[in-house]
Every structure is written in C-alpha cells, then in structure tokens.
Image (cartoon, rainbow, N blue to C red; front, top):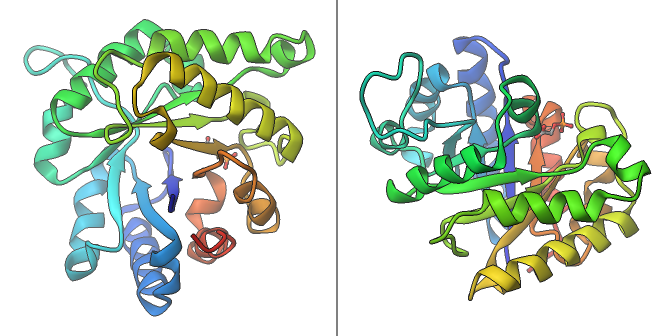
Length: 254
Ligand code: PGA
C-alpha cells in the first residue's frame, strides 16, 4: 500500500504563506516522481486558505489532494460558524480530519459527535481521517489500548470502509512535543487497531492507519517502516516544505 503523507497545518500561516508552502510542495513532488510511486499526498489547511491552495496547485492537482481539519455534523442551515461536508466537496476537498485530539480537548468533541461528523462527510464523498490516541496519563496507567479501542468503537460510523476512512493514531503526549512513541509501541498499537477494524469493517486490511505525533525527517524512516503504518499525519513539520518532502522521501518502496 502506498503511504499517505498528510499535512495538518492547524491554525497557522497567512494566505501568502499558504500559497508559497503549497508551491514548494507541489514543485518538490513534481521534480521527483519516485515520491508519487511510494506516496499519496494531502494537505489540510485552515478553511479560509483552501481556495488559495487550490489556486496554487492548479495543473498539478494530481500530485496533491486537499482536505479540511473539521466539518459540521449538519448538512446545512442555521449553524453559525460551521462549515458543512458538502461545502468542502464543493470547493474540491477530498479529505477531512475528524476528532483530532486538539478538537477533543479544546472543543470538547466526543466520539459520538465525531461519528456523526464522519457520517456527514462520507455522505458527501469525503475521506475521513479519524484521529484516535491516548493521553500520557492513560498510557502510564496501562489503559492506552482500551482508550483507543473505545474511540474506534464509537467514532468510526456504520458505512465506513477502506475507501472513505483513514485512521490516524496520535498519542496525545507525542503531539507537538518532540516525543515520539517507540517503534515497538507503534507496532503494537497499529496491530491492535488493525485487529479492532477487523471486528467492524469487511475491508479492514486495506484501511490506512497513519501514525502522528512529532513525525520529523529524522524519525520518519523508522516510523514508516513499522508494519501497519500506512502513512503519517504531520503537524509542525508539514509547515516546512523541505521537511514534509523529506518525510515522504523516507517512505520505503512499495
Ligand atoms: P505534530 O502534530 O507533528 O506537530 O506533533 C501532529 C498532529 O497533531 O497531527
């Protein structure tokens, strides 16, 4: 399976920076076609930068997909401040990140809400990148597997399949901290996630499971070679084109 190299730009950058970052990424990929043999690429800018990113990608749209960082569970109507899944499809997005730990933490998002959003997104032909992961305390207490298992059980809705769903395992304590899980821990958790998906999805074997949390050029090769790691969800390092491309370049040959 080709690796999915997903950039989560979070709430960063100006319009001009979004354009120059996009330009550097698409040209980097276009100059080294071996990257496209090994990886698929998606970036998830802030909502109001999406159109600029598309404007910059233009004729190179085949090398870079664009996603959002959230969507509403509602289809349309009086939901001030929300952006619907249909609006994302309409503007050209193919992916949406859901249930990121920052939204769970700062917006109180629950697994039930995440499943509702995922259902709305699937209804609009978006591929959801559903995030799961334990806190440091949960890991220290030996509950990491139970926590992730419960998140998967509730946040992945009926109708999910390998085409419309990607899972991102992001230990909360590894996000933006420079700490990463060991390859052994990642291996064990990704195998566990695969086993859990087997209970739910007929095509579980083809669902991509990304690792996220301080993925950088210097640890990407090790992480991307772990069994059942089918790509990376990258925050900080995705804001630098060279780092984002170097991470992709550490992906093994398919
Ligand atoms: P990070 O963020 O790479 O900066 O740790 C990852 C994420 O939050 O998706």
